[in-house]
Amino acid sequence: MTVDLALPERALAIGAHPDDVEFGCGATLAKWSRLGCETHLLVLTDGSKGTWDPTADLGELIATRAREQQLAAKALGLAGVHFLDRVDGELEHDLAGRAEVCAWIRKLRPTVVLAHDPWKRYRLHPDHYHAGLLALDGIVAARDPHFFPEQPDPPYRPAHALLFEADEVHHLERIDDDIDAKAAALFEHRSQWRSTHGIDVDAPDADAQRVAFVAGLHATAAQAAAGVPAVEGRPCRAAEAFARMDDL
Image (cartoon, rainbow, N blue to C red):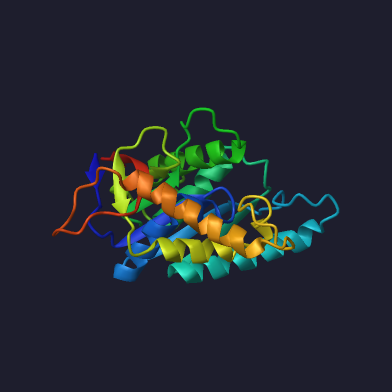
């Protein structure tokens, strides 16, 4: 088990949908941004399946989710948000998607790429699986000159990949001072409160539901931090967990 990468110069987090990255590694991105890392987010789909309302205007939903993602990125201190706008629920790890992810890695030149773990057992949502594979396929393509030689930016090899929702945890990032930024970013995804956040805004106990949601984030982070050694006498109260890949 490793704890805390050296502060990367640049980081790129790749998520299937708006809010996926915030759940998976939002506090880590907030920490790195706060310390001076140039952090970017690449969202692969348009979020158009992200409602339980069968009468929803999907064009309006797509626009709403893009605005929410920009606000969430601001809460985390990210340097940029980029969208591929693939159709939500129909993501595939195809050659065209690999080329698009490769192009962003070559353009942004991140020290570390963060993404869904595609090998998570019993994963339910297919977009998360395909997004993880696309991220890793893109890393391989970005490093080698004979993949997509028509792209304008030169080949580039990230130093690390950190996979959130990890099936097997190899690495932890301490987030004691940044979990509240993660919560703030997630609350910007207001269209998702009822579904993924479990908050009914019309319920009389909506405020209590918000408190419970934040408490759940803290509980998950505390569980991940269990056993992490103290630094300079300060115990670790919160962490985000990853599978770690080096020598990419």
